[in-house]
Image (cartoon, rainbow, N blue to C red; front, top):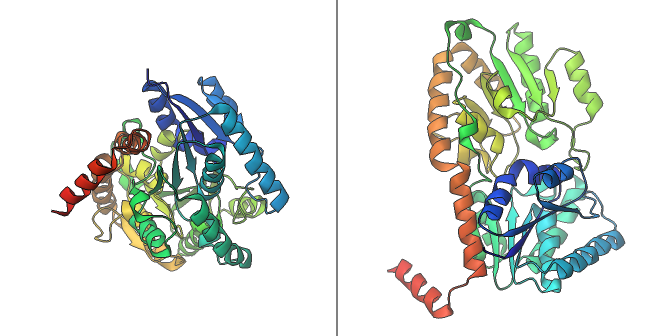
Length: 396
């Protein structure tokens, strides 16, 4: 048995369940004592039902109250001192910063911080986000540095940003593309003659945040409806009340009532949903590396997404494995959907190319293996002379 204890800390239990459950299961399988930590929610009990030790941290994602935030940090320090983990793995910016600071104060030997995208503070044009940006950047510098510390980023653009900003030591940065998808759960739907004649079914599946491109999606739906096209627009996801960029529920309900789209709400069975659509779009403003696109690619579905960090890791600019469009451009999104509506053979060609890429680059077995390698490097660090020799070998 491994016997080592690791804490996986995220800002929602939903994230742990939907994005890191496979990692937790693999860690447990390899003999680690796994502790899961997040604010309370409906998925915490589901994680406990799977046999995991899950604890609710009293953290409010939207809180800016200094006293409350200091209280959260103190709670984390007490928790980690009691649990005595060998490693803390934090996900998203707030959990990474708080988890890393608390780990240092509690004497945790090793820390991994995974930042999947730059989040609201770095992507929003709101005044509040612009004011918070330098503060968060300084907090990250304080929290994310130190010995036996690694920062995992999901795309080369974020790597460049962190290196340029000198937020952490370059040597601690690791590029691992995404959280991984169990591609065996997804398969291509057999094509029939009826498919070519049926209305094109398009879905955007994401948290209902403005920076996912929700407004552009609705504008594209309105434009194609005005052309009397029969394209069916589906929207899967729920508002995220803990995020300042959340789309109001009443607005989404209004779009649905106007017939612009069909709102499905939260969808837990993604393989089923993807088996019932023809095109997946994600007109996001920025991503870490979007899991929805990879799941769709595993189903051999054509992808339309924006030419922004994260998204262009899944869809290249060649036009061979999907369609890239400019960010915040509803007309370009409508044009791309129109193109696929008129050319079902192109849909098939793009989908097959996307599937091949997903299987070779983004399957969760690849991502988890790379992540566990980082665990091993931090928990069993090589002597300095071995590391130096290895670096010299790479330079030769």
